[in-house]
Amino acid sequence: MEHESKLENVQSVIPLLRRLAMHGDGPLRVVALEGSEREALADLVLWLSSIPQNGDSNPSTSGTVEDKSMFDDYLISFNTPLRKQARGTAMGMSKLAPVSNNWLTCLRAVRVLRIAKAWRKKAAASSRLKHEENINLARELSRLHNWDDYDCFQVVKASNGRPLEVTASALFQRLDLPGKLQLPLTKLRKFLSEIEKMYARHVPYHSSTHASDVVQGIACFLCAEEELSSKFTDLEVMSLILAAVIHDCGHPGVNNAFLVTTNSDSAYCYNDMSVNENMHLSVAFKVLAEPGNDFLCNLSQADFRFVRRMVIDTVLSTDMAFHTGLLKSFAATVGLHGTDLSSWEGENRTLLFKYVLHAFDISNPGRPWKHCLAWAERITLENFAQGDREAEIGIPVSSLNDRTKANVVKSQQVFCDLFVKPTFQGLAGIAPTVCGLVLNNCNVNSNFYQKLLDAGQSQLPQECACSLDTLCGCEGSIGGYI
Image: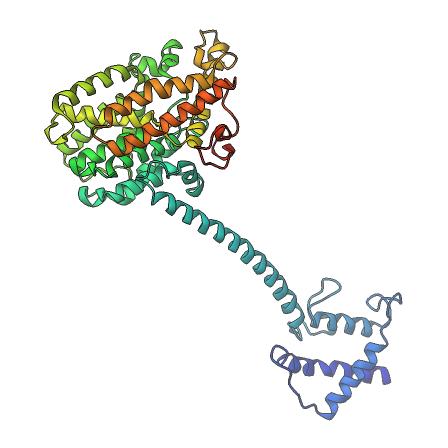
């Protein structure tokens, strides 16, 4: 009887525990207890002290049935049950609610706080990185018209691999072409994004990074001190930029001669004539025609035909097979009409745009030495990859593509001196500012190549050759650019 009476007293403390739990989440409070409640608490303490400890038999598996039931119920009331059991069923109280959720709430809170802390730490790091990338991107885009200071490789990193999209978009907006020509910005950005995807990532040189580099060269031409953009119509400016954006999209990493020699599908499709260039144009205009990409939708039919014709003529001129003829035609036109573009009309203006795009398409040797060297490495990798394929299928391997025989340093110097320099010398009368910078860099870079040759090197250095001179001013390594 005494045990049963004590058990009843202990059970009577449950309502008290519920009442105490209501005050458990706030600050410390004093709760008045009635005499029976104090007695019940005392019995509870006495009963708990009789539970075996540390190695004694477990009350959940020994002792009286009542003791076992009460032990389980108390554990359930604190939400730490020893085994799965419906709350209150051991005492015949099937709908009994837990006395307190404080302990479980605390555990959950601790876990949530730890997860939140880890998330905040990760988010903060991501935010700092994103902030740094935004700062770097904004800095480079602010130099969009600066030939020597702009770093397209930093744009690649800061834009998360979207250099063409961000560079072209910045130039379109810098010249206010969306406003002047009513170009929908959403469609323009989608078109640029889709075109960038058409540039193969596995191609070392003819990539979207190269296309963005050419677009930036066009920006230097249009926005230099001469303000040449004001001497052209908005449609002409937009056509030139668009041609630069698409001029190599879909490039397979091999030249026209390889495609023709191997009887490729594209060679059959375009009858062996400027195979890559025709393919680039076809791919680009198909992308433009897709839903949501037609940013030229507000142009009149006549204006669209003008843009399409201008872009086609300009991109086709980037075929190196036309290099010599293009230089001769342009020199003759400058000799006949002078450098005042107001007297250039019709086909002569088209010739100018063809020449300008071709010039900046081959302008890498006129970049500052560190970037010149990075581009030389990329074109060499692409040439050697083609040479490997030529050897594999048993066709003659050109000297530039033979990794076992090629003198890369000499070939780069020759391209700089005999192709790039004459091209920009021919354009210098019209755009003296940017051409002066290009030609100065060509001279510096050619001297670096000569120092490498004099030192007996035929392959490109893995570190900047400024150790041979003090003109470069870079930090020595080009590893981050290749």
